[in-house]
Length: 396
Ligand SMILES: Cc1cc2nc3c(=O)[nH]c(=O)nc-3n(C[C@H](O)[C@H](O)[C@H](O)COP(=O)(O)OP(=O)(O)OC[C@H]3O[C@@H](n4cnc5c(N)ncnc54)[C@H](O)[C@@H]3O)c2cc1C
Image (tube, rainbow, N blue to C red):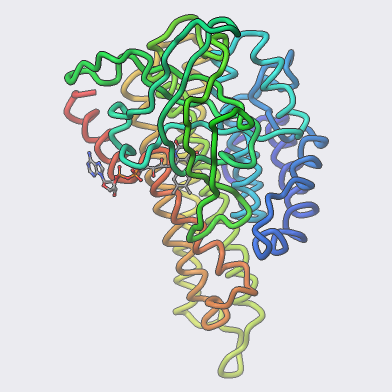
């Protein structure tokens, strides 16, 4: 580990790495092959105190910093890209809950996550609205009914992690029907929707990779939830709440993809020392060494940026500073660099394995398939470049 860590952070890293080696690596291929969600590994990770770290202690968390959250994401995904992202993604809905939920909401919806009992999601993307998030059309109408004040939700979401197997999805909806075409991000609210609600229907998607995780297309057909499921004190805050999460989420996902790149690199390096061709290990050929050296260099550079961004955001929060352009830029740079780097490194890992790298039985095959999602979710690479460009031209 080349990034400077405090003693407790180093201890956390060691524990998360050891957990990955003992409880993720030996079973990962079973989950990748079966497509099952890794519940048993998740429960063990919760028992080991490695799930829900960033959340308040009162709700089972450890008030962990973004750096600490990143260390766990990196270690889990280094052990396995697919199982790692499933474990990591179990908390997807929790970050907005942790920041904006009421004590009652947190007790009900956050605490069981830290015990490894349930998984969660955040529903932003729709079939027709992804990058231009503010243009979403899912509606939530507030009505008074026999059950008291409720929201009636109609619409569709797509690609939602844990949308089918999870317990609830924090759903971004339009609560104000009057859309300002200049400012479509106004009038949006996050509402917690339990996945067993009547009218909620989720179908897991067939995907390129991340076989052990689950991503669903969801239909909301007059789904009724109590008005108290709104996140925050008032309607219309959903877009801003989402942005506040995205900045953390981007660094966190960068750390996860850094881990995937390191995992692919570890396997390629080990293979290069074992596989012999022409009477010598392939790692003794300069052509292979340069490849491995570049993979190593790319991982190290990404690590420096990921933890620089995480530390900068942690420091700003400790000092109660407003999120400013430089923090947003750092998060985008970390996400853009680490996810694109992971794609390159995983591709090179397959190359080091030769034909074996193309076979399902070798782990680098699914690392290669899994890394690609990183350049798409939580803002595509193009959107990260747009964000960095806006900062450069003072347009954010
Ligand atoms: C594995 C996976 C997991 C996901 N998990 C979740 C989840 O849990 N919750 C959730 O809400 N969503 C999730 N998503 C959805 C993801 O966030 C979106 O796919 C992503 O934001 C892109 O939206 P889109 O697919 O509609 O593509 P589009 O927005 O239609 O983009 C298509 C292409 O156009 C480019 N493009 C679009 N706008 C611009 C622009 N302004 N400038 C330059 N290029 C542009 C994009 O970069 C992309 O290359 C997930 C997606 C995947 C693949």
